[in-house]
Image 1 (cartoon, one colour):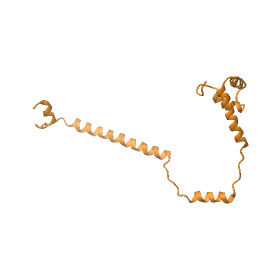
Image 2 (image 1 turned 135 degrees about the vertical axis):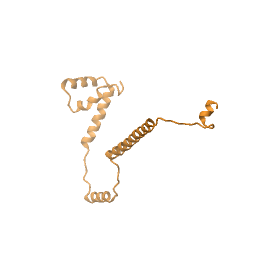
Image 3 (image 1 turned 30 degrees about the vertical axis):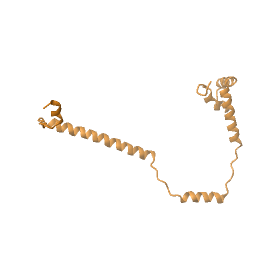
Image 4 (image 1 turned 90 degrees about the vertical axis):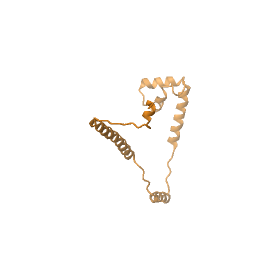
Length: 134
């Protein structure tokens, strides 16, 4: 089986942490006897868990800590547009375009609907006369 086909991969963390029901726990345990992919993944998860368990946080010297904080505070504040601001701007642009098209359609319909006389004259040099053969 390749990694995309094995449905037990998602259950391995719960298996390690004993968070599965007894029936599911036994299914995963029996599956691990034959699936090399899950065996390898289980070894990798255990290796990461061991590393994290043995990781020790060290205290930072107070002088170094203060220097880092003062450096960060002295940096200029970078202004970035938040997600909400970008969405409002995008919505405003989209709304403006839609309103412009709607107003254009309404105005053009009113102009042509009220004018029953359409006197369009084509000169001899027009494209229309070229195709009509005049």
